[in-house]
Length: 414
Image (tube, rainbow, N blue to C red; front, side, top):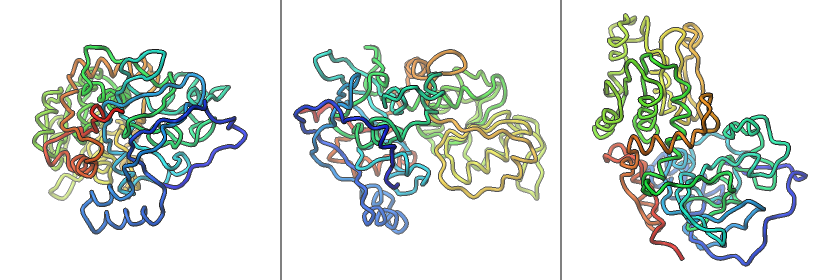
């Protein structure tokens, strides 16, 4: 990623000054030689070599409070997301370059404690840095409607560019012992939720965003069963009432969890086309393998975002059906003829906000995490000092029988 830029006239004076405390943080610095080395390392060495290369564990001044309404948060747990790994691998899209600022501390899946005289309490972070957090008035149309994930001003205002906390130089991130967040980003955690459950609220909110785009009552296929895929299965089972919920999952542990969370049929990815054909009573057209179906699923939720997963989604989606792209894609090479010829709708699902059913995604996510017991998806936690092991584990989670890997900051308070 490259440096972000902002509008100078949109940036009033810096934040509320005070004598800075020190925090421990994993910091991603923009170093072109190191970034290039990470990309090369990822191509010729184990993936964890690339992930570790751009990061440094450092003691730094905690971020200043940017203005009124901002609070200090002491993270308890901070998840490692697939988007974090893509950034560290130097494989994420260049689309993000203008909306990231350096140096930044990663980590946007966060449960932590409020700090300061106004009182503590556990909170979950809603990380998108929209108009309210950036003190921009008038707000953009999306933020006016409460749909902060579509904010058009994530490079402006009184903050450095950053689409979310965890990709912004001014806020810090969850992979540290201290960050700052606007009060509009903070959601109180009920006493009934463990820290492990609470750190799953943000990925559950993302999954709900995708699940709520799926029409109710049809045959739905889910591709991928990592954190996002399993949360999507739970969200679809709770909100879409599918006639059949078919899941393609690579690994045995993922397959078992998908069944527990509401899937009616779980198969390995290679068997998805045949499974959809049977479930929808479609005919196969091809040369002996199933190249395409005459019918297919009413909706497909792609939780991977790769060339292969999108090709599978196009192959198993019925004419006039929809594909919800929930996994973060990079650059893909894809034959879009079926999208055109079958008039399939391809829609993205990013972040969260206000939903058509009249509720905030994060409110629904708290309920989903509790009802589906999604805290059980947290498979392993690590202290910051063991970040090479943590990132390796996260990158190999499925193969190692894990789902969500997180940093545990509870023993690192100062």
